[in-house]
Figure (cartoon, rainbow over the protein chains, first blue to last red):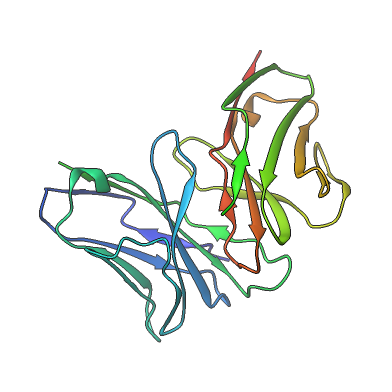
Length: 115
Length: 110
């Protein structure tokens, strides 16, 4: 009974490169959420997706960041032309629905380091 | 917007009881979560409160007072493995996205 899977667990990129973070939700879950966590800070919501749809991207920077959740395959968070400030832990969570209580199940995170 | 406050850090002794408070200011409250997060790991779900009162689950209990905008997480019979960050998260305003507080880092001493 696999939980939420994220890969890679650790990613190092040089400034200006692209970072691709992958998330496979729990079996039976069709809702995916991406969060960013900086050291000593709380989880900050970035984007909420369902299959082939972006439902809410109010927390995602307008430039350089994009997300998708295709019909087949994992959800992808893509960061173009990374900068040092993008260094953070990126967590993906999934839920079966947005109804009650339906807590989110989190993946182990991808720790992005930009050098 | 929402404002969620938690103490930054707390310390306690193994075997003791500790209460971690969370206050929030929001409109259209729709539920409060507590998560536990060990260093370098994913947050894991502990509890969910939507009605006033105390929810008990083993050594952990969570309390909610909607009129006061206040919740606490109570941990009994503390163990060393309880050393972690405890995140309070609130759903409100018709949003399905919980807003997380900064978390309370709990250090349990022998």
